[in-house]
Image (cartoon, rainbow, N blue to C red; front, side):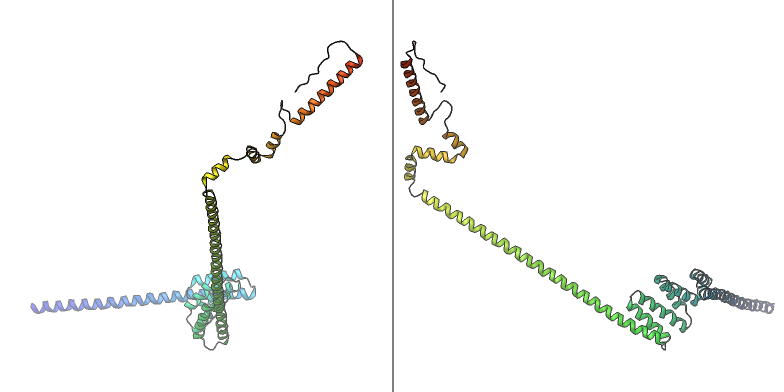
Length: 311
């Protein structure tokens, strides 16, 4: 009985190992089949993508219809991301249309997707051309170098590399010259500002000295006047007391405006000058003389009338 039980236990273990191995084998086989199916699907998609690429090429060659060719290349890329030629050709379309941003993107994708060195060489060569158009000479140099790594015998790429290096050198020299000119201009501006400031400081200093000199002269004049006044205050008071009233009146009149002086010199109403009084008296005497002579001549009766005048 014990022997039969051991035999059954061993048989079960053997079956379990067999089933495990069989499961693993079937799983691997299924994965392989899935991988093969995936590869077949990729190959089919790439084949369709190449057909669209071929259509785009024919459209450009026969009709030169850029819009239709672009649409065909886009379909090719949508079908298979591994179609480097479709990306490269689409990049050429954008390059010829002067759309450098789109051209750069497509050439970069073509270079990353390319499987062969020849495809990589073409993609990076045209990528360098995009950089040359944009005057990005340092990037152009790097792109041409990458193209030559994949095809060292291409003389056109080598020529473009030499040209890019020359243009880069000139660009750097121009940048350096511009930088030097800017520095010189900044220095000239600083020197000019300094000269203007020095002139302003000098002008302010001269004005300050003149002001100090004027104040000093005023102080000296004031001191001299004080000295003259301070020689003998009593004499000054006596001299002031002895001033002629007429001189004082003239001095007072001299302080007044000319119109006021003229008004004072002219006789006011009800006030005659000595000359006017003299003239009036003479006229009265003459008038009286005439009246007397007339009376005597005509011998008229009555009392003589004395003429009255308003003074």
